[in-house]
Length: 551
Image (cartoon, rainbow, N blue to C red; front, side):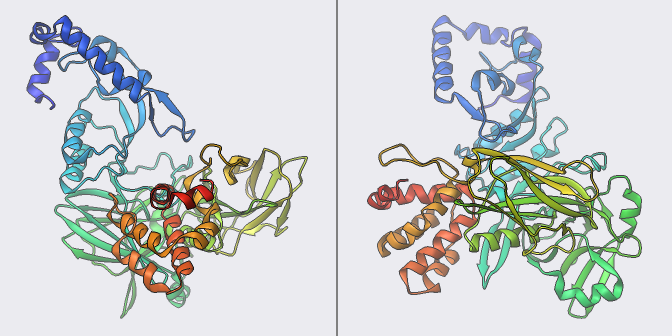
């Protein structure tokens, strides 16, 4: 249990090395020996912590970071060694730790301490938090001593997460940062996905779309993405262009104080003129109307909104070709020969998800590389090239592609017969003299290394592993294993599948192979964590098939 604030202040004022006089009386040699043994056990058991460092998967020794969160020797003070340590911890991953609401309450109190050096992100995903725990985190983010920018809470689907926001052009444009990042529950019916979100009082951001909201009490809302084509005539008549996703938002219960709609415009260098040109479009049965809004770096803010089809637009007469934030997406569709699909699109979560859906349906595997390319002019064209002297690539189409309008069929296909162990890929824009995106692609990024029977488990991400064994699962999973798998994926905490999704698998088709195919694809779309859980359950439910697939 954490000490109350008055006790903590008293101990600090009485101590020079982090232990008060009252603590010193209790700090016997025997107790010190037990404490040191306990600390050593923790250190050996949890030798590395994932901090979310730029090189994904890199970890740091616990010895190098444990002092940053006040693991102190003795009663509760911060000793001189800890206070003098000047380095800061940027991100800390505490997912899958079964903290629950009580643990989060204690952690929140710790992070309110002005000496705490955790500055950017605390990942608490998959910790079974309820409203009480989320409320503690919301209050934490409002605390003036808290330096955190976001707190991911639920099961992560990395490639569909909140957009990466790296743009030097608009870095000075103000944007609020204290938002609790939450993952919605997703249900799909007739290929249309509906996202459901519930929250207690606080400020929140949806990890799928970037949609933000603030509320003074509990709320439940739903939304789905809609294609701008439904308003094609209205946009042409009013001389408007899309500036973000079109979203059909419904408030199911409670009241919202504010809603912040995402946009992909870059406000850098021309903030005033861009803001003057942007409006919120409301679509109703009676027609469409536009409303003035308050712009921030990545959102448009509306107070006490009335809900309908929502989307941000800009007047073409004032802003014909604005600068927009862009994202690059890379997929592998074949390993031998290597075939890659490369997309460059405005950072519109609806369009990005449409691309992922199309590629998954065609058995494409997303390659996890930094995607943010900053901002480009909407009139830009671009091309792709590879740097691999020993294996030239064939790239189609051979001409530049236009950035606008976006389309799921607008991409470069890169084909290489026998690429080297690693090679570089670049994207070149017509408006820039230097490449706007450069990355090294290694063999392990798109395939598993060859492995003889009896060797250890396959390498690569779990999404890749599940994709590689998809044919074997479709032909090898029995009806009993399928039903057990569906049950276990629903009762897992947090659930991987909803009961509705499980029913969709069974009701879609009476052919077993089609049901298994539907399940595999459904889990694959949910990301790496969901795929890992399914593979673990397969090993438990059908170890023979698991062995045959060399997992």
